[in-house]
Image (cartoon, rainbow, N blue to C red):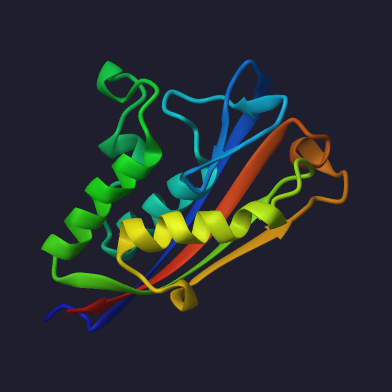
Length: 162
């Protein structure tokens, strides 16, 4: 069987908010009293995108590729991890057609930071802004995200053969 001309992948991530951490989402530093807890910079949006890319190619997930047991990835810049994963995607003969994402956070409000996130992702993934969607949602004060204890993200990517 030959490789498909298009492939789709879905990704998801969630991290707990903690005082004393920087809040980085979509490669953008967001001023806030809390940041996301994780082995790397805990960028939930980028982590969801990475998993969507890996999933589209039926490769192991982000935790397998960049394990939290490896000090090499301690406080790692998730944009650099995304670059590495996109290199794998390209080496398999694929490129991103479009990317659709959600950031789910009760606070802080994300809307003003979305244009900067899109710029960072467009540059990192060699995409036009028209092929990147980032939407901000809340949980209407329901569950850990709605209570302001965590932030989550979802991503769907469509890859096409180069």
